[in-house]
Length: 109
Image 1 (cartoon, rainbow, N blue to C red):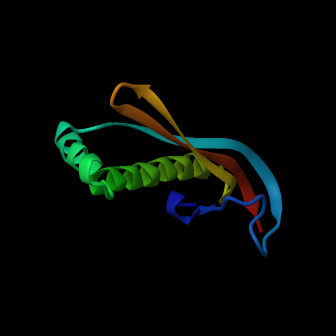
Image 2: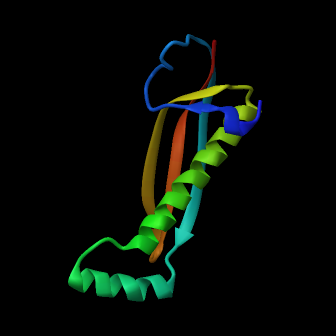
Image 3: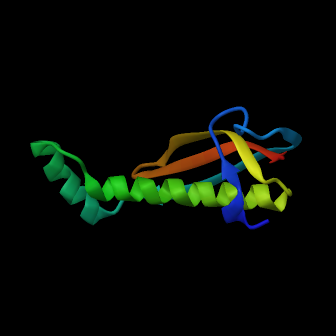
């Protein structure tokens, strides 16, 4: 199964499907550092208010990369779905953060 075909849900079950096998914990992560050019723009946004679009884009890309890595791990275990998916973030060092995506790889029918 291709990793892009892996169903990912935040619930305990996939609606309309039955979990027939639990493969185990799967995860994907990425660590991103802030960019000095983005920081300058963020300082101005902090003064006048509003969304910091560069950071929003960076976080969206990070989530997708972490999800892709989690799906790849699930596919390597022979799963076709991941249930109970969660995201976590943590600061790794000044100006860098980790985004972690994790869940339980399962086979559903």
